[in-house]
Length: 173
Image (cartoon, rainbow, N blue to C red; front, side, top):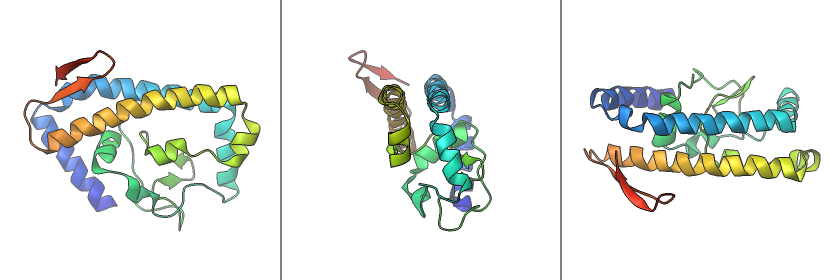
């Protein structure tokens, strides 16, 4: 995993040299804000405490090889958002990104975001989960859009054209 991350860090340097990152900077800021809002909602709802307790008990929903679900583009987003990756897994038979303080990733795969265990379903009121799900939906829409942009950039296109569904028009970056 470290080798892959190192290769992606080199790719970030190439994107910086080409001036491409400045074209997606605003989208990255928006994504970061959505994720910060989600994290606050998890904390306020009590979800963070439930997850931390399971982790301390040696139980975690972050199973083996989940890190391989992560695309290069999603890892690039994490690099661009300043994620500090571990040098090696802290827990055998668990996801590479899981540490004693939780997941190191800022932007996570939809599978990781969408998973809610039975303990959380039992202890967190439905209204609080609904609010969290709304934020996660906004986050995932924007994250997917960024991933698609990074895929197109990887195709070495100089001008990127996207359809913005919220404004019903095309835009260039």
